[in-house]
Image (cartoon, rainbow, N blue to C red; front, side, top):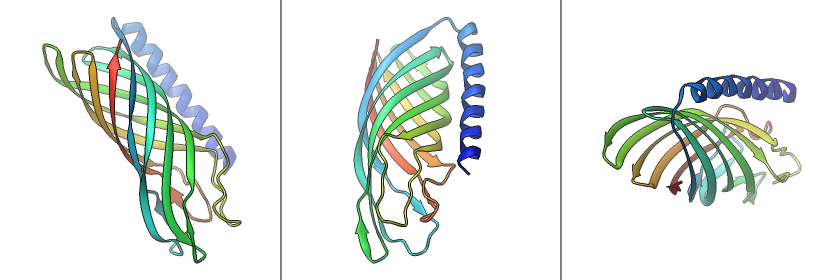
Length: 191
């Protein structure tokens, strides 16, 4: 299973790198930015023994590069604290995940009017947990995971506001059959 995940991870990185290089070669504009915001992590569990699944609020910081104009490629790197709460084996669990996130998104500006633009973004997000999380002897959270991420955002002059949803494509724990589901809002500044 881990080798399949690594193969998927490598293939996704290769494909997105090629896409990014192609887009960069044709692009005339590169914008950099930073963002900070909050997230709400609400994992889904396939294991029916998990009860009282409650999401928790966490925080995120990120940096991004936006390559292109109306259609653009936006790779980024971020750090997130994700939290959740659930009951498993008659014990309440409150694990915390410290992740590095690598969203690789393609975007489209639906509306542009002077310093204002409305845009949508879509693409994969690769995640790496910085520390091993063990909420019980039976759980084994994986270090790497792959999510799909979709979002909508606005730019007003150099300021940005983004709302996003990410959904896990891979299980982050085999015993719990857990997948990531996160919503978030970020505010930022472009350079």
